[in-house]
Length: 252
Ligand code: FE
Image (cartoon, helix red, strand yellow):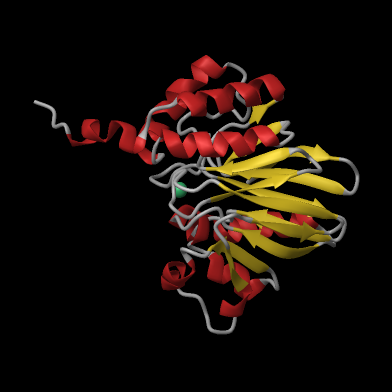
């Protein structure tokens, strides 16, 4: 498992872990670790297939810092399937949309740790990490009905979950937005719920000071011009219910 440091100012560090090259049927996924002083958190830690590798890599990266929080952007298996293991082996508290707590329990959450799986209310919330405060912002229906992103005001990284996800390319940073579109377009058209949801999100995204947008799958968008390109693309995108008839059309 390799990693890339996205930000480091000496006390605050943002690291991307990736599993490129594991192949197979499972979709490529990024895990993100944020450390502020002695406190650490992991975002969307993933499923069983990568659990032990991610746990080992995270412990290594944390050093003496303690894993305090686990942020779960939504309820998909590539995000939450191994959450019981994370809660059993660490003292961390996991945060997930209030909509999904009772459903995720079906992945098997031991009674011993269920009090450490906490609901995020629809408007989002603040989450302290060391001396910093992370902002959990709503991104409902992008794609899950109860869906959140995490904004880190220290590194100015917006962790966008499935929004901005690309499936296929093995580069870590988007350098040519137009060329990158082919890897995002199909996924967003089918998984994202509709343009209205994207516009509601874009309004919040524009109110934030963003240097990097880091999705859960594929490459990151770095630098203001690239971040702006991505937000505008989202604002104009027709997807989901906007084009639902096309998903019913049979070929031939
Ligand atoms: Fe998902």
